[in-house]
Image (cartoon, rainbow, N blue to C red; front, side):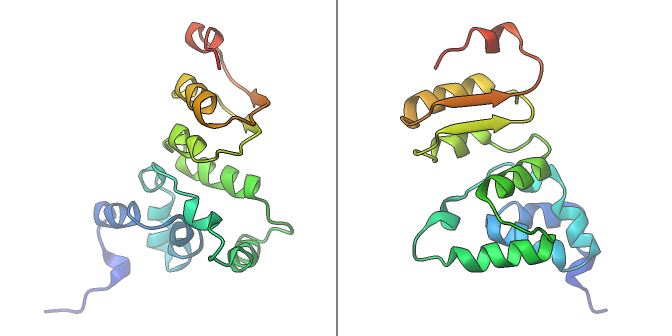
Length: 151
């Protein structure tokens, strides 16, 4: 039997595995292993559910993540907003944004470059979970459902 390599795994297998990894692994690990893993990591199926909670726990050293993120992606300054934009962009619209927003109980401002299909659901989650929320900015087409949505 010939030796098999991790980088030779079929795309559907890689997507299945990567969809189960932590956000930290998907941002700072997988894309830098090899070309095939990078290509697989850009598939929106890997980014459907975004869990930022491990990145927010106090026992976790956020500065190590921030330093590595800046180094790997060659950015001068780290911001959570920048990370959020990166991940949502990488998901190409497949991220479960409403689930993410509901976990940000101290959310005050939300800026969206596009209005996602789940926009009215996001507004409802904000209304129920984000008591400090004061500002929303979104770009895109507004249909009747979005225009009539209330927080």
